[in-house]
Length: 312
Length: 312
Image (cartoon, rainbow over all chains, first blue to last red; front, side, top):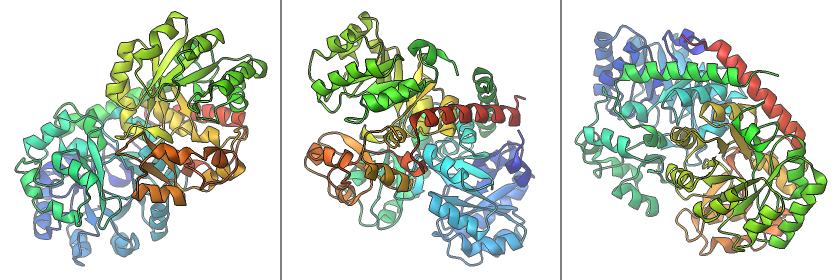
């Protein structure tokens, strides 16, 4: 499967793994890169020393391209740019901040830079900053979100109608059907978050993976729409159901014990960031299977649709 | 453009107009039917006498098929079923209530019955009731909604994976891109609400149409998630922005002066039910143009994608 995105990033399949804090480390990211997708190392955990070690580890685990996400609101270390450049990373996504902040420095060093955007306004700002492409993030996705969330079905074609740069669809992406839909809406790649959290190579506790498998499509909540701090989408638990009705004074405080949730398996210890696609995940699969099934299904759907609905 | 839905309903294009209360009357619905789509007469206004007159009027305005929506929570007249049957209507969508309530009687009279569903659970219940197909309603759409709303990108493929009956996608549907995406996700038809509200033949006041044209994709609010009464998606106005933070004790009371909004043009008089696609509507177009552009664009996109991504 070839398009502008695979050519630009030097990957076999235009499937990018989302940069989940703590989770998007070398074990998962190398599995994605080795399967022909784009593995990404996160920085939103803020644990820069660990992240540096993970980036180094990627060199041992894969000889395929991988990227780094710079989550600007969470990484205040000005050295992050030179560190990423020094590590020889060729692809960076920037998010949660002003797209102008790092774009020039990264591009001058020859890196490919995509900015993550939750609205048309943000997309236009990023394009003005000179990014090479966009990750367009629909509100159905898990994680930190724009408080005025917009579904991929609306946001993605809107942004694509305003730019010729390649666009990666995030939010709702889980298989070949959603990939084909994203392509119909104008994207040339997809980013999977919750699907990768639940993958066999994901480092999270089995309890969380099983909770994703068990979840129905209605089992997420959208929290903290009115701030202060970021809004977010998470799995419905006792804690998050309470937070939905009685917002926390400081939402970030709810992440204090996140490691007990992510790696200790206590789903009530913090907030399990999860997208609506949890309702479409029935099985824990190896990353390579996820990627090859997605690509094959996408191609088959597009072929079948073109035959069923010929141009008149 | 032919598929099971066009064959089943006897229409040229698998595009259905949503049954907006007060708005889905003969002027708009006949324009849709005459353009080859499926015009629908509403009952959610509760004004059954007017609705009966509108159904009769349809016979003068079109010789093409049209349908009626029975919004069960709003129409408590037990005669509605025999009235619809007596009028010779061949297609009915039922919504906002138990799918078993009218399904048998309508089907025994030879009508085709689709039920509107906002979740997989509701879909399975409707299939059990024996419906001929489903309208699957994503949370990005305008109007009354399930309080736990799910985006079309997730809900549509989930429901389609569990049934072989034809599915009509609602929520986010506005053009050929969204139609192609809906087909990729498993639908065989689309339902347009906000796009039809803003159409030239729509009876609503010019102020509301212009507000839809002016709206950005982030300019809707989701209200009344915790009840009592139905949740809903509406255009962001001063009134609805207040209601977003300070829920009404009785949300239906906010519709008291709805006619002053819909037909008087006072956008603050009540709640303007509107979907996120308002952000993708830049122009007031005649219904026939909307339908032919949508179909042509959909076919062209599917053709282009199949060429760009051949099966390997």
